[in-house]
Image (cartoon, rainbow, N blue to C red):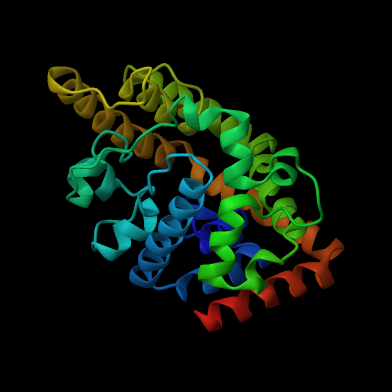
Length: 284
């Protein structure tokens, strides 16, 4: 989790927009995202994670710095864009295949039992953040301290209420009648390929839940080999069914309509929020 991910990820339209027309918010956010250099983001993420680890260690907790943001790593390694057919044919969703893609022997780990305790999470993120209190929905605790050290006070002090509102628009888009119909067509298409899943998120999650054991360790041997084959097949079918069902276009159109309505009602607040983001991007 990096500055860009926290502040831009929620309001980005993501890969689902394809070549469709973007809404007024996504248009500007996409421009901002393009200004973030993947190599710089990766370096900042490393610095952030080292700061978090040092802070947690002083409080008696063991914290292992996390992997760099997957999308940033993919860009820095000149891999195909995640979520595209080209990426899917080689790496599926990037769940069991990410080490191959990134050229790393380090497996993506799930939270351990110790990391899931309230005490650990409070030290890491701050009690107010966990409880959803305060005007700014940014982490406190060791993560907040690390963000201040790496990105500056201006990032941590940002009020991301607007960002949170925008993030919910993508979820609301799936309630649109045309999206619901396209999802049903997509699910039928996937069923025809032997995949009993209701949504693309459920498809990817079905791989993730099989990839790790109860300790958060990636499966190995023949089990991993079989799952990787299944992952690639499912991801390829997923994207093919999105194309044939028109799901990508339906989601993009629904999101654009929701953004247009939200922007019309909250233009000043949205512009102020995106102005802050633009200022932060210019400082990186």
